[in-house]
Image (tube, rainbow, N blue to C red; front, side):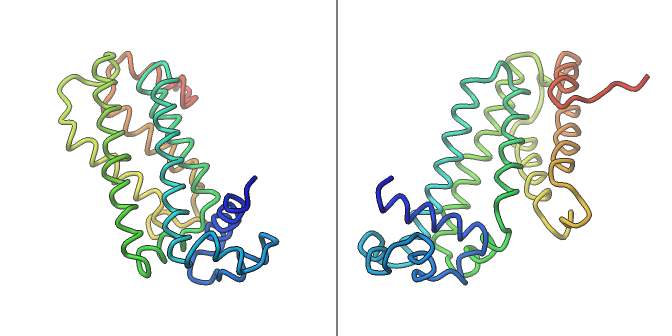
Length: 204
């Protein structure tokens, strides 16, 4: 691994654990095992490191969503796999990271907001179109409305006020919200796949 990539990997790990405000370039250099001068040779300042780090995280998400679209058999499998991926990412991410980026790094935050619209919301809409075409989602859904509702569901799941981490398991919250969402939009054919992918047992 080249030095720049190692620095970025270290920085992202520290940002995800501690947030961005309390992590210094010296902290990153020490944890990475290089001099602070070496860090500055690759990243002109901390803001550049934050910008490139966040963009790398967003690009990783985009790559996964694209691969998921290509490798899944149907829209419901795609939706569930995306949900599982988001849950796994959230478990490694201190919520303070997003809070601090939003508060102290507004330009970087705009990239996150653009991602939420251009990638997350767009992916939800495309999944709805796919599900309708496959006969798994109801035909006359108003896609713009339903997609925004799903995005709000996802945002609520990570809201510590709505679902405090000491009271709710994120995986269980996402499973319940996703099942509720799919049951609301699915055809009878789609309901059978919901049970399969979310391992929901029918009541006797």
